[in-house]
Image (cartoon, rainbow, N blue to C red; front, side):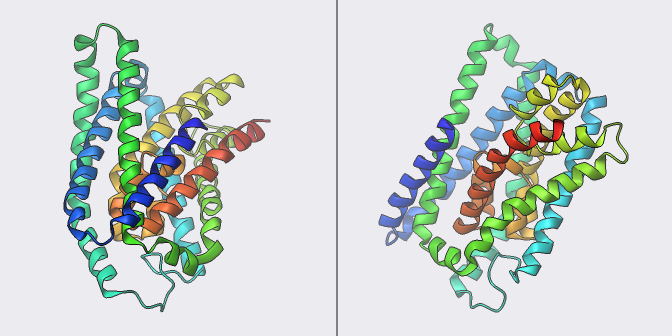
Length: 322
């Protein structure tokens, strides 16, 4: 909860600062570069931290295969659920009301972002691979105290997230269109987190049909919604060792795969679908990537979605396990 308050406060401060600097268009030349650099540092640090954990790397064989299959199916079902609901709500690919007038400058900005999405995906992929490799092969040789490294990496990640979330809020305030978009879409935006959760659980249920996991285990894994520090522990308390390991790997994979495919999802499928990919991390780690690939209002929807899903995890996982 303290992290949530911190992230929200930083984003609100960024929004206030951005709203006061709307007249200075030249600012966007360097804010975008700072965001890109911060994303590179954040993703590399996260990957390095993950690569340094031997227990994670050791699970990349058998259990990792089950987790990967679940991740792919769940992401697909979550995105499909949003696509179906988006069309039902009569929203276009960019999250606007179908038939509504979109300012020419907004169309130009969306086209420009679409052109940059491919290069951003490549940069993120390089950071993930390099970070995992460095963490696995080099960290234990550089740091004799792994607890110190874990604490240092955790602090760097928190600082990186705060910097990125400040600029997410800054962009929202600078654009000045967030409230207008929210007013047009209305309360429909509050339905999206629940639609994503339904899609996630549907995907988990589907996985139970062809993976060596019971329906209860599969649903509990899916109900983690990408929160790998919470759901696996609850599942393990019930004595479900394999399901706990799959849950841990699945939630990690969902976050990392989301980091890679959010830009492409926004470009090829839809802006709203991009926030369905990541689950809980749509409110923190993946939020800056969603904002960079879409718009400020979509980033706000993403934050709301992540918060609601995070609140649902402590309720749904124990409820499913009984």
